[in-house]
Length: 460
Image (cartoon, rainbow, N blue to C red; front, side, top):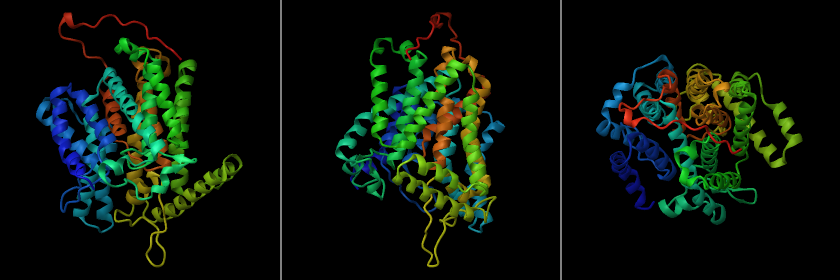
């Protein structure tokens, strides 16, 4: 470990406070989340009696502190609503699991605090800061810009191998370095936990930028830069391909296809269908009714042997972990790897991949239901508030990718356990958009009125 680890981890708090003094508070929030997610080390400080200090807690606590110091009046904006219950229940579910399994209230409270930093605080901050359509567009642009910033780092690792984290911080973020090799080359991971996480970050940025470009928002906001956006988006797309994550690439193509279909058909039905997919998967796999063998047979006819073998291994471990989880179906087994399957000698023989199976074993149906309600309900609210016939309105079109980002993340959580705090931030933002009406705040002075809007320019 290099000296940069403590410098970055503990120096992030004053850096975030500096962001609040230099930029609009909403922009400081976006920059604080994106930059910390992209560049802080994969390291945690473990303390006795208080939550661990990680890169995610560093970003959440820093932004919360900045809000308390520089923008405390914004807390008056928040009013509890039943739509906030999913995130509250998800954050509180570890306490119930610990108590039910005899692990004690102290263990439960500690687990609640550790979950609140990555899930509760970003959601709460999103509820506070992003309440209008223009705010969501700015958040989408911040995600797009963050993905663009990651391009040179990803390309470096594609050529030179994924060693930036080791070069800067003195250790590899993932214990199995062999997982960085894919398709005869390297899978970049930069400063994230895994290459799959970096790939999904790029996809999230691509879909955000793709829709901002299609809607004409980028040309309205940055007319002097209008010639660079399409090449940059193309370069980002190429980087996604070079990231060598077939799942992330398929999700990107699915998102692009859905945006085109909705635009031309003026029907949200395709998105509703895709939104139902993770729900049907959870019902089938969680109940044990569907063992996935027919999917494996189909993949064996369509895919290459290596990927078929990987899918078979994944399904096998999901099946045995699902059997274990169904022994404690309501509130799960709690922490300390009690939901894993072990051999006669006590050695763990189950390897969970999907986030859903981890939560199912840890917090049962209670935790799993609250998690996917948190991920899918904001997208559903957006579709109800803005039917497809409104998606040609430039203000709506600019943020039309936002519900898709939630759905894509939910689908990816079925296969992988790759967290993204900006998705949680987005969940809170979409909830506020629904609750507060999404109306743009009118300037108080007539001189501050914006000029009449021009029709958006569609390029492709």
